[in-house]
Length: 405
Image (cartoon, rainbow, N blue to C red; front, side, top):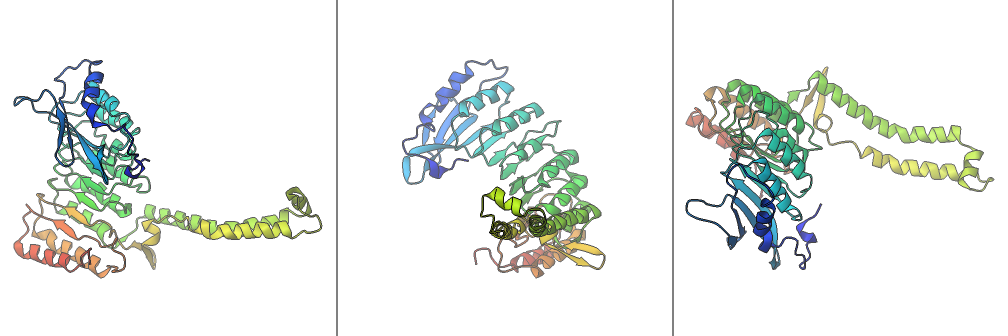
């Protein structure tokens, strides 16, 4: 994957002087059922490069934002593309994809309030395969009946915003299914504000948080979440008992780990039993020195043993669990640090549960590991929670040491 540090000052591939002309040239090959978008270019410091066909009645809706390379003010890199407030048909997306070919340092793609359908989401999925630097995506304001936003998680996206996308519990289930494989999804920020999750959709999010240790920020504002949904959400944020399936998963990883430790000695035993003088001759060694190849074989296997042991995945059901008589417990998700629950249907009934969760996380706090702080920001604006409880919740959050200290 390319990075800004790889850029040669002589490189002209990200030349902002021709991107609008390139867009118009490619657009001329297609027909449009709706109004053709107007492109607009600017730099990150506010300097306008060029903008054509702009009038008071028709503002631009396609923005190309260029970033000046640090230390090389004359080198401009296409950093962000935004398209909003105009219906985006398939041909427009094709033109945009062709226009962006060659701009290999693109980081942010925002296609907002433009009527994206399930078919366009599939096109974006294919489009992202050629832009492996894109790690921030927003498709706010684009509900579709296919609920296939999970396709956007099949790439190297770290920040995804799906606000006002009409996501139902069915859509939440598909999204969370992808996020239950955190090794394959580097997503750290997820915005699901103003959707239709209800308590049923939060159940899938809670199940995902039991295993995902990548997401640090989650926005669930304005999703009609009630007490039952919140109680489900609090479970993975503190100590919880593993289900039968999770226990089986844990056993599998432990067995695989032990197998990796045993395999080298088994291979060594097999070599002693199975290979003798013929093995030595095959290696081209001195026939009279029967120990040399075996010594080399043993040494190589012993060297591999620590490396194989180190391959044990950092799985929460291995690293953060303990056994208590017949049950297995996980210490909980302490990676999520920002949770927005504003404008839901929560009241004082849930406040004690929130406080108990925060106190538990405080007691489990590891001052030597700032990556495992637990919640340090919890937003509850717009709920029917009394001021007294809000102050108690705020006090619990303030008891945690500042990340900067």
